[in-house]
Each structure stands twice: as structure tokens, then as C-alpha cells.
Image (cartoon, rainbow, N blue to C red; front, side):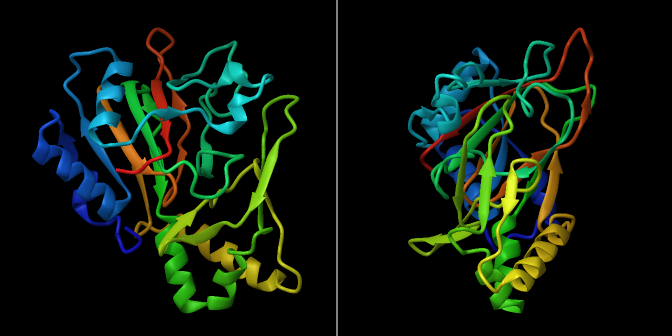
Length: 269
């Protein structure tokens, strides 16, 4: 997947998924190749049940609540099946707004690579906008590693990336590398935006600056980045430990607002 080119037309394909063995193998192969896949499920069950069936078929194990939402003061924002929709009473800076979200990985407090898979299930799309942006940050890192090894190495420093909560009155964060290798697999927690603080390793400010300039440019490059719009009854399954993701701003129909359900897993397909 770190060699995938997102300009390949087939990356946009939605697999018509009916839980057959051949279809399941196809989903797994696409996730292995591209880091993600999209699936249109039968729609015979409630959304949560469809997600449960999909996770079980892919061998993802049980859903996981991110560490940030296991705290007493944040549990209201966390669930095994998290509703992502704009509501007046929802104070979550990402889930409860129609604004865009910058590139990030799920699991702000978790060590790199902990949350391996994310499923986003679309109950109802927005009137306009709201596409999920996927950035193959691992592929971009590998390109950087070959062209500027010193810059790439700065991103593997254990103190280079601190992410902190932006929930109101919640002081929580985690510091670690932006990229690492796990049994030979390149994994990522590359993120940008208001949750992020970059800390250059001693004497390596120039290297980190070059690295970040490269990644930020790569995030706009169609080789590494793609924006996907889910329709009702479609699921996006992606490797949260390998690619980064964000969201475009969107416009809602007040009578039928955009509604996605997010589920996290500690296993990969």
C-alpha cells in the first residue's frame, strides 16, 4: 500500500458487498494494495448491525473506544459506534461541526499503530461537500526517505509529534514519532491542524522543516491524496495506522443532516 498511486482509476470503485468469500477477499486485497476500500452493503439491517457484520467478516475483532473518550470527563463524546453529525448540543470540535477537518489519524492519545482500522459508514450524505480525504502519508514518507533520508529520519524521533486534545476543558496529549516501523511495516500518526505540535530533534530543525514542507505538498498531490464521497449504505474501511485522513466542509439539509458512524478497531483485515 505504500507504493499505491491514487491516480489509478480503480481506487474509486465501490465493491457491491454481500458477504461472500470472494467479495471479502476482494475487500482485503484492496485494503492491502491501497490502504482502503469502499463497500456498498445490503442495507437489510440497522446501520450498527451492518457495521458489526462487516467488521466480523473482515476479522477486525471487537470495536474499540479511543483512550481520549475512556476518561470520565469525555465519555459523552465516545462510543463503540460514534455518530458523526452536526448538532447544536454537540460540542465536539470534529464530530459536531460542518467545518472541514485537517489530516489526522484516529487515536490522539494512543501510541503509534494502536488503532489499525477505521470504518466510516454513511447513513446519509450531506447536501454538498463532506468528502473524506485520504492521504497516503506512508507512501509520501517512503518517497521522502529515498530523496532526503535526513529529513525523513527527523520524523521518526520519539519526541517529534505531540498531539493534544481540543475538547473544552480537557488537558490530555501524547508525544511520539510521526512514523515508525512495526515488524517491517511502516506505520504513521502523521497529523496536522489544531491538535498538533511539532518539536524538532536537537540540532535538526532544518531537517524537520524540509520534511514537513514535503509532506504538506504531498498531501495536495493526487498520487498520494484522494477525496471520496460516500453514499447512503456505503462504508469506507481504511488502515488508520498506514494512511491519514480528513474531511471537507459540508452543507446540510436541516431536515436530513449528514450522518456518518465511525468505528475503530485494534486489528487489521
